[in-house]
Image 1: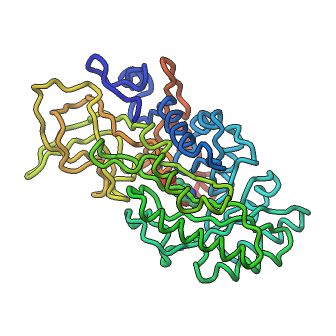
Image 2: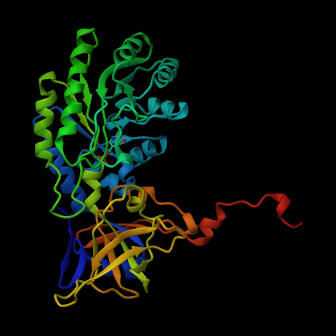
Image 3: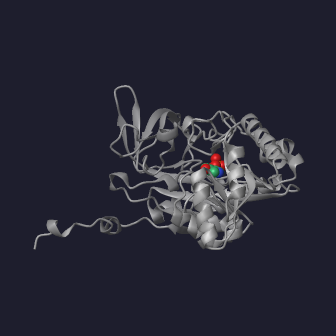
Length: 424
Ligand SMILES: *Cc1c(COP(=O)(O)O)cnc(C)c1O
């Protein structure tokens, strides 16, 4: 459910017409709905009411400070994967004790920064990382609360590029090695191995792979406890999918997900950590673009728009489907044409949709690329020296630019021409 709907023939974000924002900000731009972010967070958190659970929003899905601040006010914590994201979470008002640090390649300065900030938990993914964290923590007279991320070797049944829980993926500590790594952790100074962590992938649309992984985690916790480890926390990662295609492919509701969690690990009486990203932010954002040209090819019609793969890489990177809506609601009699919706970037992979039925569109018309709130703006690049897309947050009748479009001067000023190339 989201708050992007037609009213009187125009697409609105909450109570603001998208065309009004476009007239002021220019296109392309991302637009997020506060009410949708809040609703998704509340539905997810509500599903876990009555379980000892804390929600850590996956900052990598959408890291804008205003987005983080919106859900921080509802009590959300943050799951971060870099020092940069950790600094964002803190700057948005999320207290360190509600932050967990995940990621396969944390550097010493990042671990040190997180230790000094006093975060809730480090999700450690290898023995060398554990040893480095131990050295850094004990040098500071600190104890780091650690969960080891275990690779449960299950198939998440999602796109290969967002499956993370198979043995061949780089993530986590192998299932077989885990007990030995917990034994190592017990002997290391500055480390309290209090939990088990798992994250098997993203955009999962069925419960079965989650349940298989979580049952394996439960087995591991029982075994570790039998070996004398005081395991009191289980971090289940993120990954719950969203309906990109509308009502035809509806993933499990958070209530069903939470009931499955209770079934799989409830008997262990652990504190449960959850790291949803896409579920909170995905349908809370759209990318608004303008049609530049319509072009007739030999066997297809191209709609060339001013948003491109550098602004939203999901279609080309993950073969992802994003629904597209004209910002001016088409009349019942308008009919449909099939378009390849493409951007201006000089790559054949630069497309947003292929063979998509849409009402006839013309130069200057606005379109909204739906479900772009997660893994959209955060993955944008400046390829082809295209300015990073601005971001806008709507809140009822109000809206604000929460990240500005950089000027060309800003962009060029990042480069430096060395002395030997400057004429004297
Ligand atoms: C990406 C990621 C998440 C969030 O995944 P979603 O599919 O957006 O819910 C959670 N935890 C970890 C460790 C991740 O890498």
